[in-house]
Length: 241
Image (cartoon, rainbow, N blue to C red):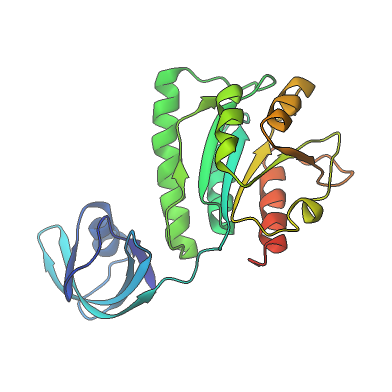
């Protein structure tokens, strides 16, 4: 069944889908009156609906039933991702959304080759947020992960104070993720480097803010592989797989 996100809660037995949602229903999926779809609201309520009318560019649906959306992990994971080269960030955002990430913070670390200017970053953030939306629809998430504005590494390190646990995945090594997550925290931050990895001073800064260095094994993973592997391990260790 097609999956959509509403911008506000549904307070009646009828709802009108507009904008990109309506366009996707009528122009892309070519759905017809009587067909059913799912709408998820910001309070993570899942509404099963039936199309009753097409009015201009909008789609009118009747609510058939509703229930809490149970598709979200019970751990809130924030990915602090050093910008990789090319379009790898698109892939990382798409796949991490499918795997259950809740927030993504792009950052520029010391060894980042990719260093877009401010104007380019604004455009990239808008594209990344759209990728997160599309991936959330495809994977039937209960939320659309937030893709934040790009920050410096120092700013990202400061943001880690919001997390119960912060894991710094470091190619030189560290503790196992299983050991770090023994107490099943509800908010976890994960740092992933670009192609060049991290400098020791960056590791020290995150550790000084309460983070812990962790390992993904003896093999060196590519920049676009590491976040998917790390997130999968976190989801498994917190019983969300």
